[in-house]
Image (cartoon, rainbow, N blue to C red; front, side, top):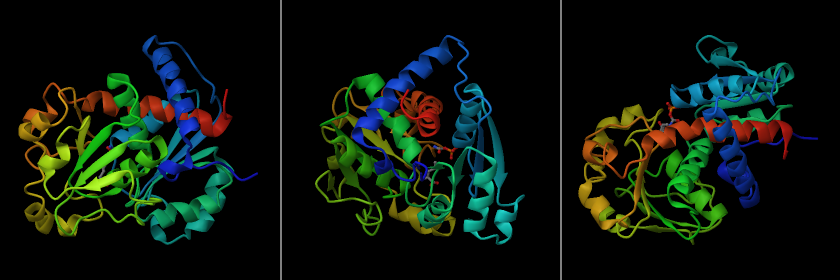
Length: 304
Ligand code: CP
Ligand code: NVA
C-alpha cells in the first residue's frame, strides 16, 4: 500500500483536519500536564532541510522526541543531497531507514518526486509553493481563540507566496474566505496555488479594503527564502503593504493578527500590531509543535 503524504493542504480532507485538531487538543493538554505519551516509540523521523529554519526544525524534532521517537537532521551541505544524488535515489535509501520524512526545499516538484519514491509518509516542511504545516497550526490557533473558522474572512496582506497559497487551499477545504491584497505584479496564481476555483478568495488593490471586516489579518515577509536576489525590488513594491494599526482598526473588532514568523517589524507589519493585544503570534508558533505531533501520529498510526 502506498503511504499517506502531506505535501499540500488539500492532501487532508475536512473530516481528517477535524480529527487532527481533536488529537491536537488532547496531545497539547497531556504535554501541558507533563504526562508521558509515547505512541511513536522506536519510530524515526528524518528531517531534510535545504533552507534555514528555527520553528519547523524545533517543532518536528522536539515533537518526535516527546512522542517517544527520534529525529535525525540532514541538510544539503553535509549530505550527498547537496552533491547531486538524484532525489529518487535519496528517497529510496532514506525511506528504508526511517518511518517518516519531513522535507523543506525549493520547488514543490522536488518533494513530489521524493514522495513518489518513498516507502514512508513524506511531510512538506515548506516549499516555494506551499507551507501546509504552518496553516494547520494557524487554523488551530484561530479556533482556540475564536471558534470555528468556517464562513469567516481572513485578510492576507503582502506577497502571494507559499503561506498565502496554503491559506487559499485551506479556504477551499474548510469553507472560509480570503481577502488578498498584493502589490501589482505579485498577484495570486490560482494554478500555482493548486486551487480548484476562485470562489473562496477576492483580490483587493488596496490593503485597507482587504482588511475591512476581516476576522483575521495575516501577512508574511516581503521576500521569501530563495528569492533574496529580488529583495531591493520587493522593498520598493511592497512599501504600502505593511499591516498597521489603521488596517487593524477597520477589521472586525475582535480580529486576530497572525504571522508565521520570522517577522520584520517596520516592513510587513508594525511593531505596534505584532506586539499588540490582537496578535496571537506566540500561540501560533507554539501550536506548530502540537498540530505536527497530531499529524505525525495520524500519518504513522492512522485514526486511534
Ligand atoms: N514559520 C516557520 O516555518 O518558521 P521557520 O522558518 O523558523 O521554520
Ligand atoms: N514565506 C516565507 C516563510 C518562512 C517560514 C519563506 O518561504 O521564506
